[in-house]
Image (cartoon, rainbow, N blue to C red; front, side, top):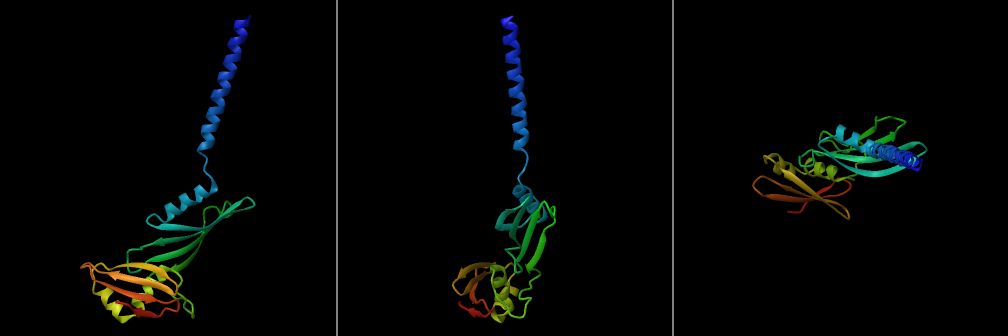
Length: 176
């Protein structure tokens, strides 16, 4: 009788272990709201880079605000603001364009806040930079934030470069 009792006890322990290990494996594959949102960002903006600004819980919702940056290596880099409220708004984010289609300063009082805006302003507001950029086959810009704006350096396919300072008020000063 003891052998039968031992057998059933071990059998129940074995079944319990198998059951709970399979439940844990299934739970491991359930994604968090943050993972679901970031997967959606990657699928909606596949060739872009993103910067998470804030991520917070509000009741049952997860709110993530981020910037999506694309076309960084072109003369028309783009930056958009994206806000998700999940699950309330499902995966339908609120989107606000900051720079798209080589346009900046959509408001009357222009303030250059982002590197993408500074890149575009550097040639829109400087005929010298515009000539350099438009006469190059593949111009490439790099930006560095400084205390009063941005330093933008344009490099062409021959390795020649031109540097400018773009102030927050969109004033462009040639440095070299």
